[in-house]
Length: 72
Picture 1 (cartoon, rainbow, N blue to C red):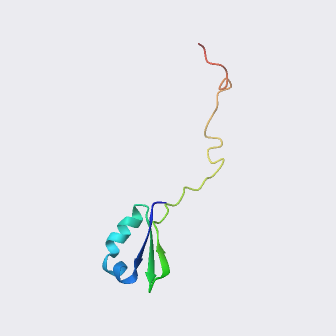
Picture 2 (picture 1 turned 30 degrees about the horizontal axis):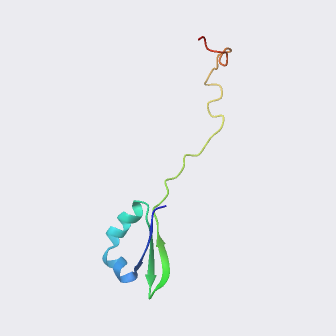
Picture 3 (picture 1 turned 135 degrees about the horizontal axis):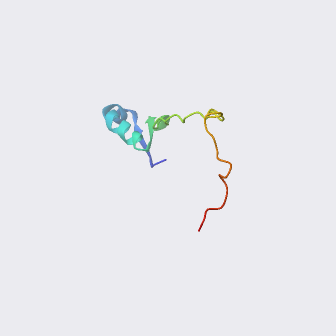
């Protein structure tokens, strides 16, 4: 993750759009109230594609000589 930055609640309310852009770029933003950290603004991770082992079974044919040496 990128750099971490702490801002007070008033600054966060005033500059929320800018802070969201910073977080989207990989920065971590800590929002504090009266100097006490309250929340963390971080980018949403893109969901990973779920794996489905074997879903191509019966659809792909591998040649018998697939692993033979290649000619030089």
